[in-house]
Image (cartoon, rainbow, N blue to C red; front, side):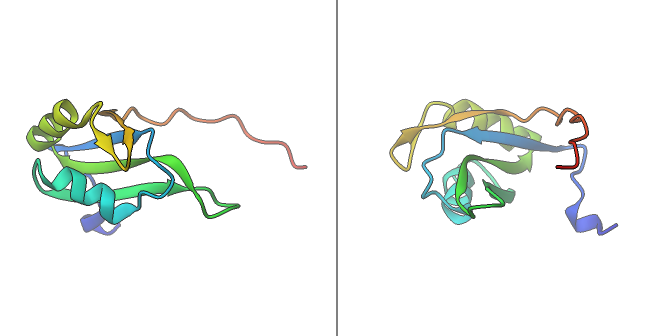
Amino acid sequence: MDSSLEILDSDMRIYVGNLKYEVDDNELRDAFEEYGQVLDAKVMMDRETGRSRGFGFVEMNDDDGQTAINEMNGKMLGGRAVVVNEARERKPRAPRGNW
């Protein structure tokens, strides 16, 4: 496994919701870099349409990440007040039928 892609124990994955559909990875990264080094920033895209799903994730170290959450939650980004909190682990999904 490529160690550069692993999230270290001292890194935090941050959920950013209510993004305007026009916000891209770079704009998301720029907004969070004010609070520390951004290790990764990714707006989630719909596989079918290629359009933003209106949320993304940012990875930062724990200290900077907590500061960013406190400062960015409710702040305007791209004309919308964003919802920012520590990301939760993704729950396993039930298998889909073969349709």
